[in-house]
Image: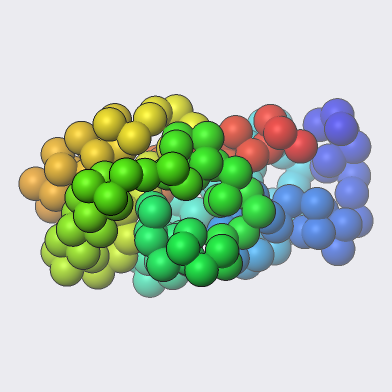
Length: 162
């Protein structure tokens, strides 16, 4: 679709078309629909996230699944998340890798009270694990900002897929 077609979509069609870009968080696209016309679709979609309260940002972050976590095991990931995690090999972990992911997920959640977010399509298993270990040393404020930035990357790639 062209920028002009996206800007001209009726609100309901706009929300239906783009809601899956944000994991279990249609509120983002609903808010973005009200700010059209966009000069840039990605920036327009991300603007409500950047303007959101910390509580809303945390709700968006918490809507994401843990990497190689319970939702992956139970096969309850969204189609987008399942494909993204598989692209990084997270559906083919050794027992040792799974244990490491599980331990890092637990440590990260214990420290920050939300899941670790990274755009897995831009890295691999070892890069994800290294980032998890490194980012555990960050402040909560820095991690909220990092998660929002990573969500922006995820949204950009999902948008390109559309």
